[in-house]
Length: 109
Image (cartoon, rainbow, N blue to C red; front, side, top):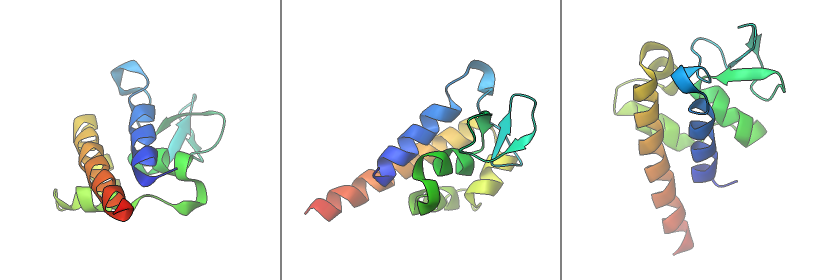
């Protein structure tokens, strides 16, 4: 997957349930009981921003654009996720997706 695809899939994942029920803070992911989980665990039901990216990128890690987008708030992605609101996280993803798409367009030239 391209970075923009990973970011878009991660954003869709944390927005997949009403009431922010697919988003979490403080850990990569949680299962239905609220217990900490690995992001790629089949029993995971909610993810932080980084965990959602890891679910789709695997061992490639989190796309760098997520870090660049978070810097505009003077925070790292984990800090923004854990200190901010869901809408702060959504805004970070939207910025990161735009950065990733621009980088991918440059690579094609």
